[in-house]
Image (tube, rainbow, N blue to C red; front, top):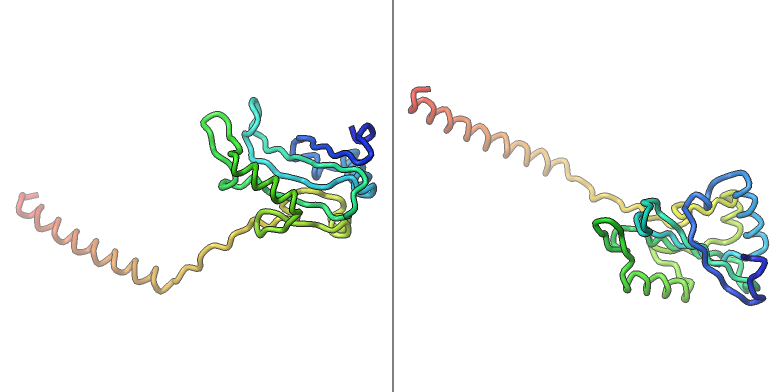
Length: 175
């Protein structure tokens, strides 16, 4: 497909995520594609998007005669980037629009997209796995242990009062 692509052509291919990181011949193909500056973007899609399979997929966008050397990574697989369906998940119009706008602007957005330099990709041994580039980790809210301790103490006191009241009721019933 890349060979038959027009001189200034662009092409998108939907693939399973494995092609982004598996070794052997797939790793050599990724290296060649990066070294020839053909890869424009990698877009991660949610699982269950395609009929008959639950695996997540990705879209690899290729472009000939690129003027930039960077690669855009978009992680559109997060729960707020698609609609869960009973049998099949769906990208909403707004989700598709966000992907297209991010791609067109080639912009970095926290927890959604990242522009990686060729050097970064080489440092990662041509591994194109999206989580290597787009950090989607969200820090959990800090837990105030004093509040938790006070809450447990309050619950224990309430439980003791209820048990005392229950004991009185049981005595009245002769049990």
